[in-house]
Length: 76
Image 1 (tube, rainbow, N blue to C red):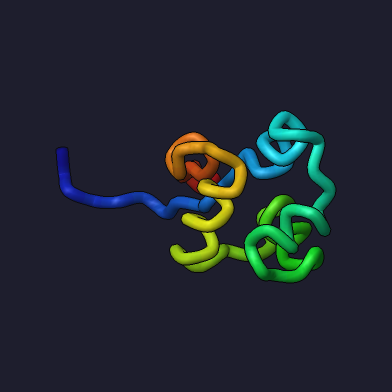
Image 2 (spheres, rainbow, N blue to C red; image 1 turned 135 degrees about the vertical axis):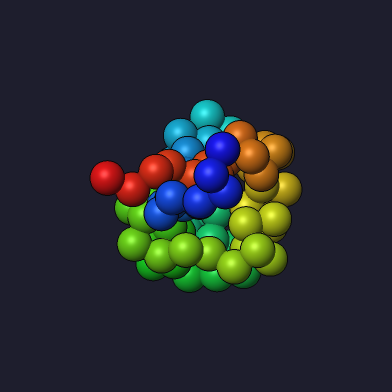
């Protein structure tokens, strides 16, 4: 292994988790974690990388492990 870390993008399964955990709307999830609906939308569409604090709040609110909700994908 050469020790080089390739460029990675943060991806998520937030929408899937939101729907499977009680069919929550973006607004309902946003209210649970104290952020805006627009923030949830931006995270789901990978336009915004959330803070660690928000990632932890989302995982807790949806009863998911962080690593099951967010993952790294190699950029092409």
